[in-house]
Image (cartoon, rainbow, N blue to C red):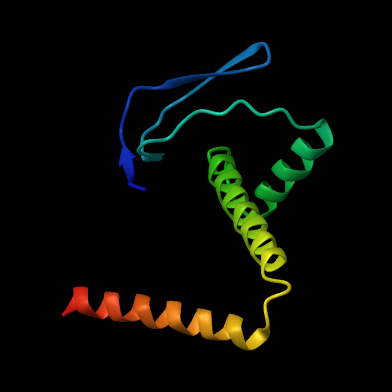
Length: 114
């Protein structure tokens, strides 16, 4: 994912019935990004915005926080599904498969770097 700094004209953001306009000067924009419309409870919104403010984060950091949270949740789900699928696999067989995969990836990585 490419992230770059931009200097642009002010951007209008619509929240409820108000129009907030702020400049994008120095803002971080992700290439190939998409816009989501999310619905969360008022309590969740307040809790998250309070947390972000306590961490010194600003309004634009909400997108970064959501993206990171989604990535962690997807990883968590993939790990849980993998564990469930391999629950009946003997530990030695599983360890051997992991060792073989690690060895293969390392060999390929070092071949490319050489």
